[in-house]
Image (cartoon, rainbow, N blue to C red):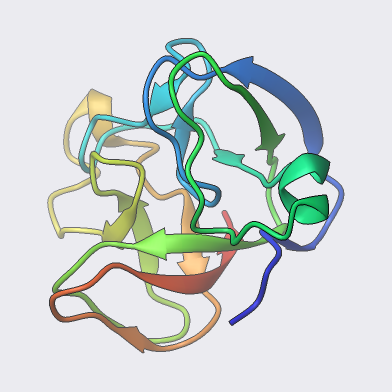
Length: 145
């Protein structure tokens, strides 16, 4: 398994103080400082990153930040490659569009995703590889839309 979140690109970088549990690779709502909570809804393309302390301490990218902890984020504009988290029960092919699962993870876009104003910008990325999840959340390389 890779131990990085950013695979390619030059996103903006910022830091938030987590207001809840955030795992590196999660889609984040930077204003609320929590994981993006609106399944299939519009989302800023902001992902939690690993910080230097995590890397130096030998921590895994699965080590979550807790409430009150400084959390680095990647503010993407398109074209970046991110090692995100894919929700359970997904069968994703390379090139499939992905949206928020409502818990920081990504999920396949539903056919009705772009019919409401709140979902017109719901596609945050396209799968860079094929991944199938069953009962566990897995990592997936994505290309930010």
